[in-house]
Amino acid sequence: MDKQGVFPAQEFQQIAAAGLLIAPLSSRLGGLGLGFETGHTEELLMLLKQIGRANLVIGRIYEGHVNALQLIQTFGTPEQIEAYADDARQHKIFGVWNAEAQDGVNIIPQSNGKYRLEGSKTFCTGCGYVERPFVNGKLPDDSWQMCIVPMDEVETIVDPDWWQPAGMRATVSYKVDFSGVEVEQKSLLAQPGDYFRQPWLSAGVIRFAAVQLGGAEALFNASRQYLQKLDRCGHPHQQERLGKMAIAIESGNLWLKGAAELVDNYAPVFGGYPDDHQEQAAKLVAYANMVRTAIEQICIDTIQLSQRSIGTLGLLPPEPMERIIRDLSLYLRQPAFDAALTGVGKYVLTEIDDVNQLW
Image 1 (cartoon, one colour):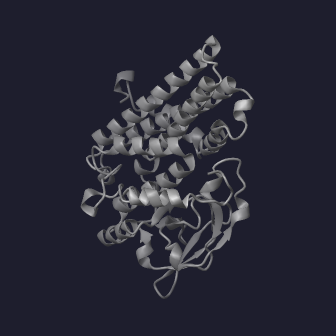
Image 2 (image 1 turned 30 degrees about the horizontal axis):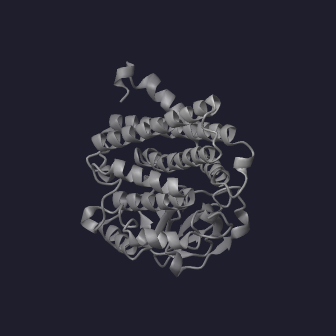
Image 3 (image 1 turned 135 degrees about the vertical axis):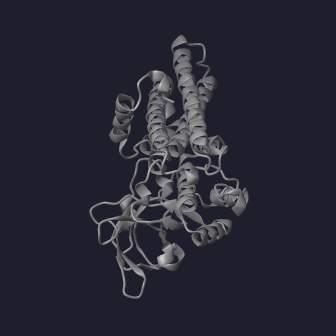
């Protein structure tokens, strides 16, 4: 699964048949409450990791689906939650298309009660297959409004040439121009600015970190099997490198377990995190950013150690390491890395008196 414009449609049919498209819904809505109800955060992170281990493209798309359903259940009205849950039960894929360039999306109220969209989104993962993406944009007062566009009911202009990546090709993350699309009031979710509320905005980084760690695990296993195939397991330098990779992978798993415990302890229901517990929210955001930073470095170290171990021949197709490295390297380039890291530093400098108070 590494061809330009080839979406993993069959794999998502299997995901739907296994009930995973509705798994993030609360139990009341027929789901498993993964990542939304107390006690299920670790289950979600382990699921995301296993999907990422199988294929990072699928993990990236599925993580966006989970993100969207969590936002809907957190901020939606009862009517919106029921309607979109029904869409998920009908195997519609959700996503969050928030990235944009200078020609970003504006949401303009119309005299007929509807809203017209003007502008484009970039990195529209799953374009042509994600049927219920968040297409957030600016209102006339410059506030940021969450908006879900029913893609099967509107016409847009898609630019597939915009997406020419080295890795993650099958995510079909095209640029989409929504100019002229009209949506109804029911497509607007929550109040302006709610998308940026904490801890929901930043704490969600643990989801994509879990997928990325799955990619690192896949690279570790592929590298290990390659060395076994060539009977290179007896060399001490190879043993040292694989030992370092094993330690890195295990530390990533411990970070995910710690994040899951923190989320479940501080949020009786993550979707209902109380606004008056700002101290706990700040702690959760800081820890999530630590997880994101640590797992990114784990993945980078795993890539470098793998490359040293397998050499040039191991980086040539059809060996799987070549594709995993390209996909993972691109996926690691998530936005606002410096802000996440400095946010951790600010927290430990201003919010705690002793290291034992960290978590």
